[in-house]
Image (tube, rainbow, N blue to C red; front, side):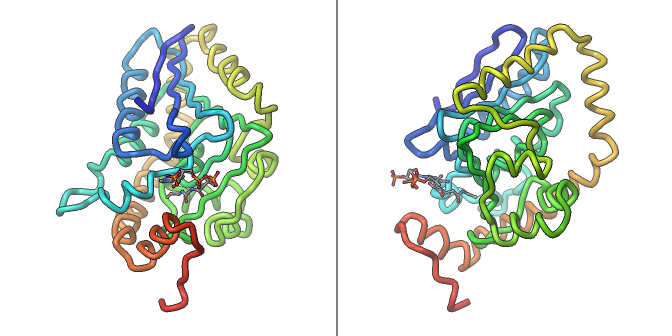
Length: 258
Ligand code: COA
């Protein structure tokens, strides 16, 4: 299985483990992550969740081949029922603290999911990017709302319209991450932070987290819905098909005919 889960010292670890494909997330993997988050939420023994990847790679985002073959909303199905949206809801609804250890490159949903974690620690070797537009897509997971809020429209435009990659230091500077750690330290440090919740009262922690998220909850859900509709439609667009085809043919996409 490409998603490994383990509960240890009150921490539910969810590890993305598909290094041969740069931890690209298939439909099965996002479903497994949603299930693990929902299980963590329901398990009284779990005080916090730790989300990690592999050395050198956190995740390269959604699996592009899956996207071409199993698009959310295919065959008239409601895109909101697609596993990727179930995963988004599970992360949003997780009222226990979620700590992310960004062990390496984070791309696409690998970055946008961080916007919904409570603590984010990034390896000094990591590069992050949200290349949705370059793939013929639009930002997702409320990133069109939260990224401009976090860092202002100017810096958000660099990351969301140009899809410019950014460093771990820049991720801290623009409010996406808490701290940069040496690559060999990032998981250990994130786990130590997650384990601190063993010494705190769980009811107060969950209610504080809910309060911190409540003012924006409806806006975030509305953004996820409207982005999701556009994103699903754009997966079928000639622009996206050209971008995905170019990725697998290991060439630059050519958008000159659009
Ligand atoms: N979906 C599907 N397959 C992916 C993938 C993704 N998101 N990311 C990487 N892979 C696959 C590659 O196709 C390749 O498969 P192959 O060995 O069968 O050819 C393998 O993983 C290794 O990737 P490769 O690109 O050769 O590694 P790299 O070290 O040169 O580059 C990345 C790593 C992450 C920078 C690069 O793979 C990348 O840009 N991936 C796409 C990221 C992306 O656009 N994600 C957004 C999706 S919405």
